[in-house]
Length: 579
Image (cartoon, rainbow, N blue to C red; front, side):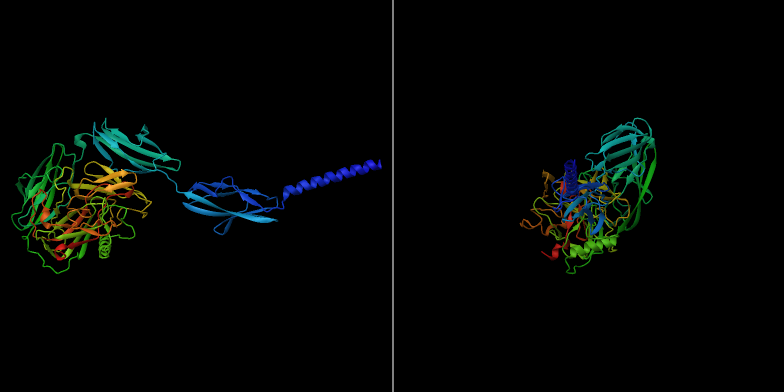
């Protein structure tokens, strides 16, 4: 019995010892802790406001282990798991630490927070919505950033009519319709709502737009009064009056205009002084009259100024940039005066001034009149090179009224595309202010087209490409448009091929007066003859001198990832004083 009792005590002791050893081994380890993750790299990816939970694997931790998560030197967690929520895009670096009685370990973890890529709709809608005649179709083709993976919905009066990105509204019945377009993905939703009115002809409002209503012109010269856009004219007829007396409109050659305006009234004042021209439109539904003032100035030569010996411009009068990737970049200009000062200072340093997309322009003057000697008289510096021509139209003006301001008549210096089948005078593009930073700039033209100046976040990250000194939410630029010579060779290689002669920032083999290939994209120049100045109807202007020069981006095109085609100007000079 005594022996049996001893054996029983021995068994209980052994069992107790075994039980004690198992508990200690599960609670602590003599090895230092080791941290691993289920994935190979310590990098986690998420989106703004999307939580990501990290639970490392810790070996040899035991029950006595303590944990610590730090972010930017601050303790943010003391558990094995940690949930991070990034409120802004970027990278965050967390340090996870494990401490035991036998050592410690730490691991740096990177969290990449991507911005939300919710869809954003870009689409030009007139302030009063769309109007169309009964039976007409209205193609609706909005651009959507981050469209990939998005779903779309078009609703008319609350009823879904399409799930495609593009939709054509058919005006079957006269009335007013509420149209809503929605684009959505996992990150968010964007919605655009507008009104479409289906009208009879009588209900459609007549519209016409003019670039100017006041003209200054020398005695003996002609002004060509015309609209650059007319809407809903229907059976319109136009009548004219000069100083209150009916006047006949003589035939005008519009071959060189590249378009057929609703009317052109060519007026040559017979005497100096102020004259009034009235144009009246009459159709079956309404009558409209527009009044113009024509100031007939003294004959050419009255205000001619002698040469001073200074070849360069002496003042920038206007910098009417179109939107573009270089606009607002590294400079702030909130008024036209500030924009002109910026352009002047840039050219003084022989640095580029980008005119932006189509119609963007720069106007300069000189401290003397520049003589037309029949040869090259003007030098306009750009930075063209092989496969990189961004043609600018050059215009010239005399100070016909003698007030020292460029408010007289512009004459185009014709180039090789003058009279070409696809050139167009009075081409007009209206640009619209984006609703938020980082968005493209929408545009519409007077030919019924729409498009956008792309926002190139990889290269130019200023908030807006819309000129900061333009106060209005939209503005229109009018000028000569050339057929683009932009060509995509591959997805990564685009060409902006050169024009033979007659344009600024153009790698011409004729008027650069150089055979340098400019492979470093340095400053080089094109040269121009005042003798090439022409009137609207294609006749030689016969200018003996000029006082002002305007350079205007001449194409409406973009070259893929390179962005919009935009003329760059580095300086404008009287070449007579340099040759």
